[in-house]
Length: 180
Image 1 (cartoon, rainbow, N blue to C red):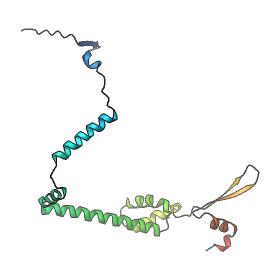
Image 2 (cartoon, helix red, strand yellow; image 1 turned 180 degrees about the horizontal axis):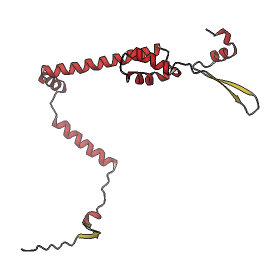
Image 3 (cartoon, rainbow, N blue to C red; image 1 turned 90 degrees about the vertical axis):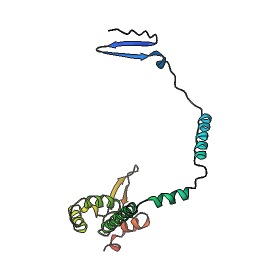
């Protein structure tokens, strides 16, 4: 058998442990080409002109009409079915959100409650009642009175509530007027 011997000047052989790797010195010295914004804009303009020239004379509306005519009856029916299912799903989720809101859930917690209750098996309304009995914190109003001590030494009541401004102050000063 004949042994072939190659003599390559630009190939560098490195031995590390058991592996032998060859790297070409010419590729190591290669620098990356950068473009200016003007060059990029010019290239994009050329590509756009090429694409416009390629599809010149084609009416998009007629093409879409032709594509639609090529669909089979089954494909059209399948598209209508998926659209119908999507509409039903949206209707169901809106109905669930409506039920949750009517149950008195805080507006900030509606999405979470709908998510948790919809994961349970069975009737949504029954599951909602059970969930709210187990987790009454989602239906409670968030009215907290906190006392802060200012730097002057005076105490100030702050009311964190869904109602702010004048109504919150009136309710804090005269709760008997607003009791149910």
